[in-house]
Amino acid sequence: MSARNAIVVGGTGDIGSAVTARLRAEGLRVVCASNDVKQETPDEMRVDVTDEASVASLFDRAEKELGSIALLVNCSGFGAFTPLEEMSVHDWRKTIDVNLTGTFLCAREAFRRMKARGGGRLIHIGSVSDHLALPMNGAYAASKHGVRGLTGVLNEEGKPYSIRATLISLGAVYTSFWRTRPDFSPADMLSVEEVAQTIWEIARKPLNVRVDEIRLLPPKGVL
Image 1 (cartoon, rainbow, N blue to C red):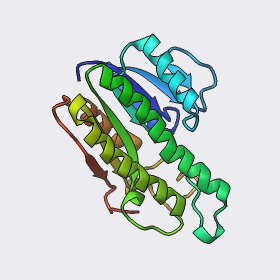
Image 2: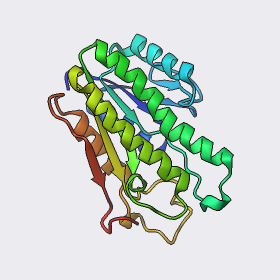
Image 3: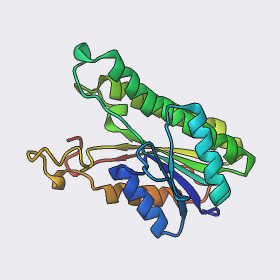
Image 4: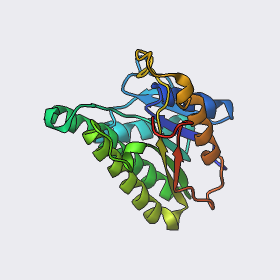
């Protein structure tokens, strides 16, 4: 990649932290953005991905610190895993707002700026739920199916401007979500480092290469 500036949204989570660390290790200047950032610095900035003004402010501040942003990685996410008949409207809306609307707002802001500056790459974290029907994944699956569609449209609309979008559909990744579940083994899941490695392999490619989708699964497939 020619430019070396990136934003990782959801950068304080397990996957986002690993991605941020890997990109920095490869020499990129990275803004880690999250609603959980306690103390803002030039490298860590607070953002509410569901708020349009907050997302625009993040990009303004990041570009002031780093210059043009060539890479956006969307790692932020929320899940409410209950049967649909028991799901509250609050949990449904929060899942859609964070996972889908948040991805849209960040991608739209990045797209506008990348278009004006000669291109860039967007990488969105998906899930097996974006192509498989799994019980108790109703809102999560709906949001991730939406991210799948959004990513495809971004790729088509970005073609004239060298803007590339990638969906990484993940199987089970060993994060803090699983650490209280001793019946599940880390050996049966992906590590956050494996996810970060895959993201770096995509990010480093020149913009004449499209990587529309990757399905990254643990050894046994869907957990």
